[in-house]
Image (cartoon, rainbow, N blue to C red):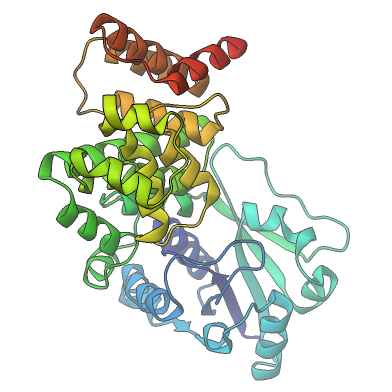
Length: 382
């Protein structure tokens, strides 16, 4: 009986772990063909960052990384993308069963997909239509068959544990992560994907020094998010936009805040004594109005990254700390913040807040009442 390996996913973007898993399956089944099906949208995930056409092109480029011998056995099937809606696995398998009625269908998946199988639509029908080839992540438990689940065959060895979210976050920051599939980085650059357009606009609007700081903060935010279990893509976006309000001159900030009716505590006194402090609220406004960001968590972190607030979410604290301890910072006390960041976000946030307040007091400068309230609130977390 002929065998067909079915490999689906968002491929947003495709990466080396995808290729390693597919290559292992093709070698395990030397006479099988593989059908690779990029999903229009995964039922268990949010909207993809790249369009269907871009992800199809990226997947096509990535498959060349298999080498000619294996790539010849692979068919790239855009059926799900062309339907323009969520397609469930049982639907794709039904279609392939009609097209290949005599084939044995082997669904290729990583261990995380196997673990999520009970949440899939109609898992019992999936079990009737196919068997599973499963690759295990390093250090993860061995996947086990379960009642009502398809037959399971483990691929030998383990496979790289690559997070697509982290990969997109690093691409957002202008990095070229080695986990990206061969042949995809040039396409990402040429098609202006994964933040290229956003970074280009920031580079035009900000001074070279401010843009370099922006990238440094975004990259620090990603590292802290990965270390402490937060969404790295959100952290990257907040880091990129945290200073977009600095496109305005300080002398224009008060007028902007009044015109846009921004809710800034002690606005009149801030405008008179320290108008540059308004840039965080202006950055939030421009992130939404100019850059089209509507994620409340990202906007909150951008707004609070300078003065902080009595109520700070984990992402708020992460960005506040990342802005204070990015690799371009060299002020007294930055080493303490970096050491605290290795312990936890709460510690990093409080140390960053402490260092900033100490600077203001040492300089006999005006202390914004919001910063004082943020410090008092932080004492309850100590």
